Image 1 (cartoon, helix red, strand yellow):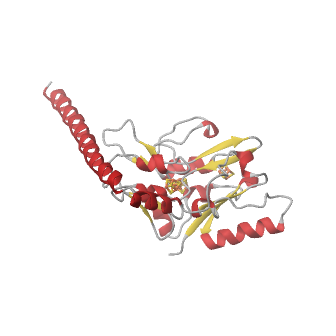
Image 2 (cartoon, rainbow, N blue to C red):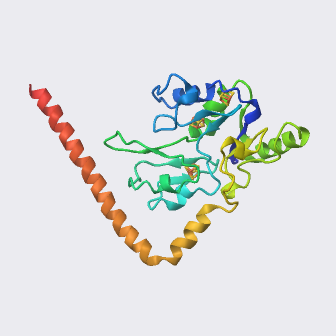
Length: 256
Ligand code: SF4
Ligand code: SF4
Ligand code: SF4
């Protein structure tokens, strides 16, 4: 299957929150706010719509072309799939949360309240897309502000919109080159810095730097590996104890 991407046209977004609601429903996520525009990203909310001045901006995982969450994860819990979606495998996760530190868009969230915590974020509705459907958020958008399709087609469409409407759009496609490119592209009527986007991000894929840096400091990598193993053991032990206590309490209740 070809590589996919979102094209988000900020000029078309009316802040209705249909994408937010559809994501909640699709992923069986509980209600976390009465007002979609006031919610924040969390382990129970994979996308939000924020009002920034006169405009509305969707926030979600950007499914980077060369994701740092993938490159920093010491056990390969994250993978970049052929369709472009960046997925997470909880069975491999150590709980080190390097992915959260490394993400240039501060996206992954952790299930702090869980006995067996996982990292959570948008998964590009991977199963739906694989079956030939649109992601739930794109399907729900009533205005065409959230579009989805082949990445090449989305880039072509974005360029066409900018060329045909030079007065309507600021002449930049955010995500085309930032951090080596992403699978969530934005076009906007105003400069992206006015909307709070990080416009200082480099054009080179960040994993190039992490690989280069790590290869130059083998000692640190070794020490880091030892520390991680210890951390993994501690996290697992903590979870085991919590589980044992939970079982104990359950058994006690059963005896009463
Ligand atoms: S936005 Fe962050 S979490 Fe999403 S793919 Fe890029 S680095 Fe990974
Ligand atoms: S692609 Fe799916 S998981 Fe991601 S924000 Fe849209 S509905 Fe949610
Ligand atoms: S559904 Fe479309 S118009 Fe409504 S908030 Fe989401 S992106 Fe904007």
